[in-house]
Length: 77
Image (cartoon, rainbow, N blue to C red; front, side, top):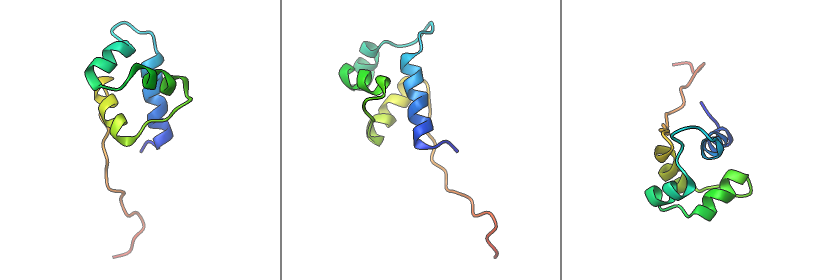
């Protein structure tokens, strides 16, 4: 299971990576409503994002965030 820092780093890399088909910050803003300045500061690592913003950004970058209940390993019944 990924930690919050791993999730945010994955999203940062997806914004910064210059691959064919990558969405520009302008396109991300148009699709999500997240201001380009916010995306730039996030990609630079000078600002974090709220959970609500991550929920908007992840699908626009081709990711799905899944929350699962932690299993109870070692718990005796």
